Image (cartoon, rainbow, N blue to C red):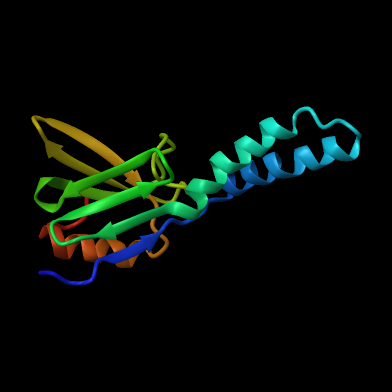
Length: 139
């Protein structure tokens, strides 16, 4: 194919934004009240939350779907290994910052894996995934 990779940013859910806001506002309240001790702790937590917020991206490459979420999650799922995919609101921990998600089941190295993602343009993303895998969405 050798086309330009298609990138999709993550969708931000209200729960993720609420957690980030709490860890941002709480240290300010503590600072106003005259205590600076917990600021380093909450600052570090903010950085750990902010990084995935800025760097969670799903990329359609020539032969695989690449998933990047912050510093920790980085994977490639070959299109031919994808068995099925569907819309879900599964709350399991994943490289998805919203509960409006897509579940992808792939089969590699004799085991099945479930990956949850939350691209902004979910319908467009699923159409592209159908095109690249040759499979229709559904459990």
